[in-house]
Length: 442
Ligand SMILES: Cc1ncc(C[n+]2csc(CCOP(=O)(O)OP(=O)(O)O)c2C)c(N)n1
Ligand SMILES: [Mg+2]
Image (cartoon, rainbow, N blue to C red; front, top):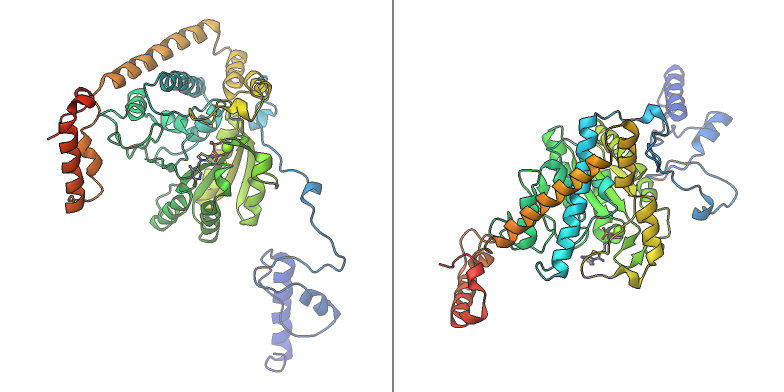
């Protein structure tokens, strides 16, 4: 190269490269492959392997994860409901904070009633959200209502914040004829096109690559919106989680990956799920902007989600949030968590650190809430849930023919045959089926 360039031009070229190498963090701007002086040798002596951006070292040193400091947990409000650093106070209005509190407690009340109704055999299945209400409401409140949500299954509060009604929740869980999904899904598999919430599917982590794909679409459309993908720390062990995170990072998609780390994946505690520093530590591996937050602090969750959204939209890149929390309820109605964790452990969290109690203390400190308001709200919210519950239970179940519709635009012959057989069977054995509780078949 030095033979091709004049001495003057070469000097200018070399200076430019030197500047790049000293100032740029993007080490792929490599120094020229020429030998001029000793300094040149040093600048050349960097790893040039594709994708590498570090330095050579001449002493062997392993990286021991246990010797590294843990990733810190961002917190705005302590357990007493006090703002630790006033400059971090999101300064939300009384009206917004009360809506947050009412939605969290309404979710709690709905969970109690639906959990009990499964125990009484009135619905087939249920999953509660106890202890995780702050992650739902705090994150949902920070988003644009049109941002597209991909949930896992334990995010009912996000829908509640967006305006999914108690009737809609109940109709889905009861599989009534008014259910948006026409009674075809298990309870808690909610979805709402109007509220930009993609219907839940049971197989873990399937929503994650879909979220990356949707975010890629948003990037191309330049619509100023982002995608939010909720997932559990257990689901993060699925291969799909890796595919989703890596696609989103390399394609630079505006998606927030919101991990609810609640300590358990059914009976598997985090100690058996992973050995790294939670899910947040994986963010760096993907080259993803990452933050860890106290999921029981609704203000911290709100702030981190709002900031993450800005990064997604402004910089067109994904952000990973790990919200640390605790699953106070059993995994689902099919689970008895006393088989794998102590009752003391659960009651510790329930007594000492719930997002609801923390926000209530904040509101009381502010003079926005008191015992009378609490009593009145408890009575009203329970009444509302019981009304919706009774209405859904009283509604007819969908026409059984709907089991065979909507997959194909026109019903193919083999599916039509199955529908006819079902009808003949039900007709022949009508005394064995509660046909009065179903919409009439044609
Ligand atoms: C592919 C797949 N494997 C296993 C299951 C069974 N399963 C349902 S929920 C669950 C635990 C998920 O835990 P986590 O992601 O931490 O969410 P959490 O329930 O704690 O909210 C498992 C193993 C499943 N639904 N799908
Ligand atoms: Mg979990």
